[in-house]
Amino acid sequence: MNLYVGNLSYDMSEENLRSEFAEYGEVQSAKIITDKFTGRSRGFGFVEMTSDDEGKKAMEELNGKDVEGRQLVVNEARPRR
Image (cartoon, rainbow, N blue to C red; front, side, top):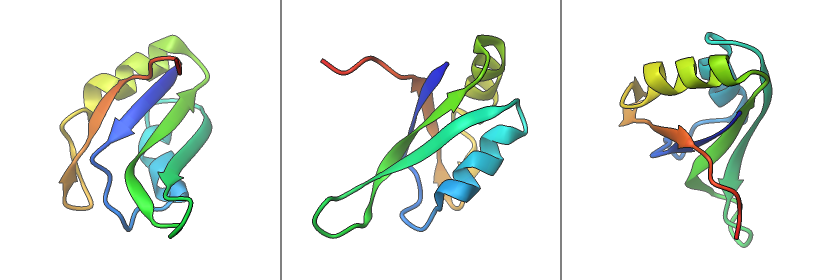
């Protein structure tokens, strides 16, 4: 299951993002989107969980949770258009 994670702290690393979600199951990948010119985080990213059940559990538990001073927004990612 692919999850969109918004309102990330600009200082959060992909390693920290992965560890937040690893509590709820196996994380296949964790990617923070960066600005291509500055290399700075854009404040959102994507986490791919190996099972849908683990992804749904992570989404329920982490949506609205305070992480590094920001309340996460976690939703199922929509495919690109």
